[in-house]
View 1 (tube, rainbow, N blue to C red):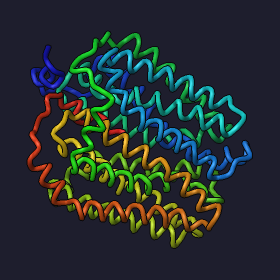
View 2 (cartoon, rainbow, N blue to C red; view 1 turned 90 degrees about the horizontal axis):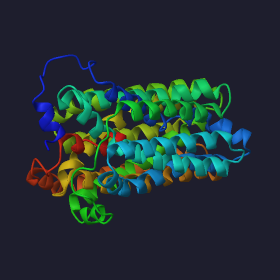
View 3 (spheres, helix red, strand yellow; view 1 turned 90 degrees about the vertical axis):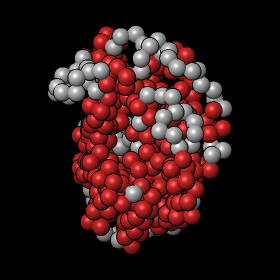
View 4 (tube, helix red, strand yellow; view 1 turned 135 degrees about the horizontal axis):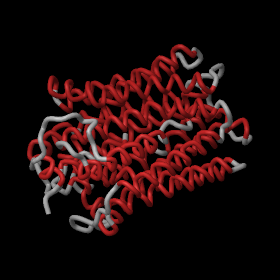
Length: 419
């Protein structure tokens, strides 16, 4: 049986990227909704805190539970997909999101919303971890076009999440949760009808494989870098809305919409150009340093809403480039199958970074409004130090790594596109 990339290479390179089977559009639509979940709750954090009588640090757990469970779940997505097939994995993930988002919207306590948000994270992990490979295998065009389509869905979801959250949150804080549940139900039906049955393929993976992969120093170093820049990222997501007290729900939604647009644009267009011009590690070091400076400026000007607004939007550019560069480095940093490397990296990255929102907003409660951003800036600065200290190890691994690890090009891009 030929791989998706082999099949795609025999397809004519010409033709519009829009001329795709209905199965591709069904999964792409579901991808947009899935990626909305990253920033959907940002505009309604303050509203949830007010309506459910919760503290900022309590509502921050909406991020922590989602990302922590998603990170741990990345260890099992390969195990599940390699045994029941991609279509069943996609449908299981969609069903979990539908149920979890709907129940979160019906909840009357912040603890219940946090718990159902964790279930949402599990569903998102199952869905997203197989979505790109599914799009590639069902695509009518070459692999490159399929990846562009997936990244377009990713960018649209990340950018529109805060905006949709703001629009529906203006009606009720429950609105975004019910909205996602309904949209995912549509996506589930479309996927079930239009996507052909996809049997299990490849070698069944083990739960221990990702932990074995972390024995490779370059991969471990990159995973540690990801922890610290995600501490900064999640601090921004959680503390940002509370540093904008006069902003309405839609005002916060528009602010994070600008952040999402820049993240999508720089990850797809700017990052490859900077990488070709300056190299992976020099660019990564510089962009991480700029992100740390951005957070420090926000810390200094935390009492001034225009400073916080500008800092949030600018951070999208730094995060877009960072996500792309770290993902590509991870793919070549260890002589293991790329899905295994991705699972190991995502597990460390999301579970470690998930503490960021809670710590940040606890600092805001116990210290002052400036403290969360100083925490984020310090965490990202540690990431810069790790990159600099481990640059020789990482460079050696990237230079020595074989170009192929026995999997498709689609799989090589898979989990890193979640960021």
